[in-house]
Image 1: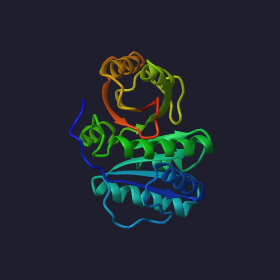
Image 2: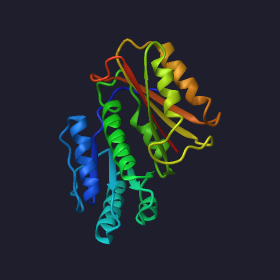
Image 3: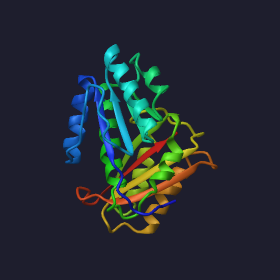
Length: 235
C-alpha cells in the first residue's frame, strides 16, 4: 500500500558513548544535521524517534526509558536499537514500540545507520512512491522484537537480487516466517520499472507468512548509480 508523499519529522537520540559515535556517523552518512543527546532530551516534536542505547549504565538507561515514555506520550513512533548482549535490552524492549537487537557493535552501528538513512529517504516528501506514515505507525506500534536487514543488487534484475540478499541475513533481530507486518523500501535510480518492484516484493512475500501485511515504497537515491538497495523492517 502506498500513501501520499509527506514530510515526516525524524529524530535520532543516543544514550552512551558507543551510541553517540554511531549516531554521529549515521548523520554524516545521511548528510543531515539532526540532534543527538546522551541525557534526557527536550520536548522537540518528532513523528518517528530512533533511540540508540549502547550502554548498561543505569543513569543512561533510565534516561532512555524516560525519553521513550515521553516520546510515546506525544504520539511518536519509537524504534530502538540496542546491543543484544546488553542488560539494558530487556528494559528498553518493554518501553519502545519496536526494538532491533544487534549482535555486535558493528551490527549496532550498521542497524542505526540503515534505520536513520533509509527512514529519512523513504519518509521524505520527495519520495517517488511514498508510504503513509499512519500505516507504518499502525504496523509497528507496540510490535516488540523486530527484524532489520538491507540487501544489495545491481543490473537488470537488481531489485530482485537485492530483495533475496536482504532475506538471507539480518542486520538486527531474528527472521521468522511468521512475521505479520513487513515494510519494504526500495532505493535505486529512476529507471526502475514496476516489474522490477513486483519481482522484489514477490521474493519477500515468498519468505513470510501468506497473511503478512506488506507495505512498500520507492525512492530515487542520488548516490545509487546503478545499484539498488532493499531495506526490510518486519515484526
